[in-house]
Length: 406
Image (cartoon, rainbow, N blue to C red; front, side, top):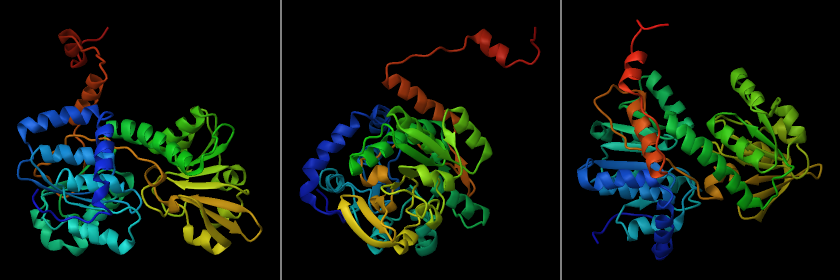
C-alpha cells in the first residue's frame, strides 16, 4: 500500500474497525446505491476533498464511496470526542485514506489534525461545524484559490458560514446540507433523536419511563429527542424562545415552560439549540439532586461548564462519560460527555449522505437543490422496497394551468 500520512490512536485496531464499518453499511442503503453509480461513473476523478466530520462508521462508508468515485479524501475529526479509534485505524490500514483523528484529543491536536487534512490542497471541503472552513479562511488563505466549493452538515456551522457570507468574508460557495428536507428527517429528527437517547442510556443506564425530560430547543433534533423520550414513557417538557415553535410543541402534546421553571422539576436536561450557555449558573442552582445534563448541539458551549465548575465543591468521574459535580449544599449534578455531543461521545451517532455537486456560484451559502433532495427520498424508498404513485399527464396539466376551475 502507498505510504500515506495519518495520525490515529492504534493501527492494530483496524480489524475491529473494518467489521464495524461493514456492519454500518448494511443500514445505509441510499449510500450503497450512490456508491454503485460512483464506481462506474467516477464523477469525482481527480478531485481533492478535505473532510472535517465525525469519524464514525457512517462517515467511513461515506469516505469509501467518495474514494470509489475517484476522489482523494483527507479526513479529520469535527469533534474531539466523536472519533471511533478502530474506525480511524481501518480507514488508514484497510482503505488507504489519510485520517487524522484520535478520540479525546486535546485542542492543539484537534487543530493540528485540521491543518493536516488540508495538506493536499483541496478542491472541495466537507464540514460539520465549520471549523475546517474557518481555519482555512484564517490560517491557510493561500489554499483558498484551489477550492471551488464545499458542504456543511450542521446548524451551528451554517450559522457561522452565513455570518461569514454577510460580512463578505466567505471566499467560496457552500451547500447547506443541513437545510435539506431529507437531512431534517433522516439525520436530525430520526437519527439524532434516536442516537441522543442511545448515548444518554449507554452513559447512565437509566430507566426513561416516568422521568421528566427537559428538551431545550424544539428544532428538528429537539423534535426527534422529544418523540423518542416520549415513546420510552418519559414526561417531556420543552423550552423554546420562538413562539411558533413553542406552539408546535404544545400542539404536539408536550408541556412548554420557561427553562427556569423546568430547572426545578427536570430529571434529565438535553440541549439542542446551537447557542451559548443555554443551561447556566442560575439553572444549576435550581436543579434537584441527581439531575443529569447532556448536550446534543454541535459544540460544548450549550452547558456553561465553567459556571458549573465554579459552583461545585467537588468533581469526580463516576462512570465513563459521566462526571459528578457536588454542589455546596450537597446536591449532585451529573454532566455527560464533558458537555460534548452525547450521541457521538457515548454512542455511535448517525449520518445522512447525499450526492453533492457545486457549480460556479458566488461565495454564499446555498440550499441543496430540490431535485437532489427528492432523488435522495426516492432512493430511500427504493431501498425500502416502497413504491408511490405518479401524477398522470392529465393531472400534471391541471396543476400547471390557471385556466381550469370548477
